Length: 155
Image (cartoon, rainbow, N blue to C red):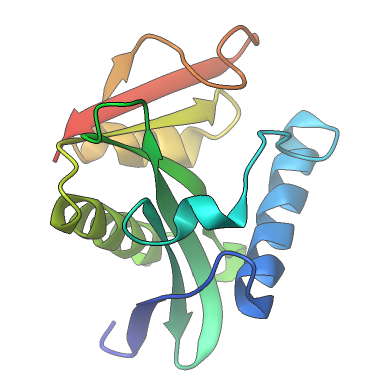
């Protein structure tokens, strides 16, 4: 996929808002409601506290994800708003975006990455396991919700 470009953008940029809207619609279809009610502030994705990335395939936005600092240690990154457009799923876009997020977090001194995922996202769960993520105790906004799965891995 030589025409895939992954670049940082502001979390509240028009392209990020478009992809996040699509991600929330996808989650809403799987779980109901708005998709994800986790409180997020766009400034959490400004370096050095975090980064938000958008993937474009032949110029078309097809995926996104970001990381934000988690906890007080300064060593943990939390993956947020991971999304790949349905039309390009299974083509390595998600893996490429995740690798870019991990690389960015590592460059900013993070030693571990963690994430929350729901049990109705089998393709995401399979990807996380395949890339070496392991189950960790639930955390975050949905930690007590049925179906919440949390994962992590060292960077």
